[in-house]
Image (cartoon, rainbow, N blue to C red; front, top):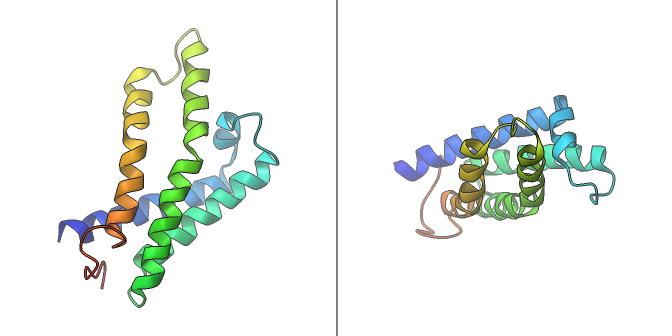
Length: 134
């Protein structure tokens, strides 16, 4: 039951983030490292990736698609980590420290947990017979 709840919560969080990336890209553009090519397109594609991963987790018909969604969201969490680091550096250079350490330190620590969680709730790791939302 815990895995099912975690899988639904994670999917809903990624779906919400995906919608925000698409509808309100400005905050994400503001933390995108300068070396990222085509930042507007990148933010749009990341939003679509979040929505696709969330949909893959939530669909009840195909365990293989759910696992693919888990792999995709895990890879996504790794790929956006440079933006999290960039955001942390930007905030720490501000006189008021922006969102501060109380926001950024847990965010940095939890990023690997998001990778693990995506793999766990999708059935990539742990009990392969688990039927999340199914």
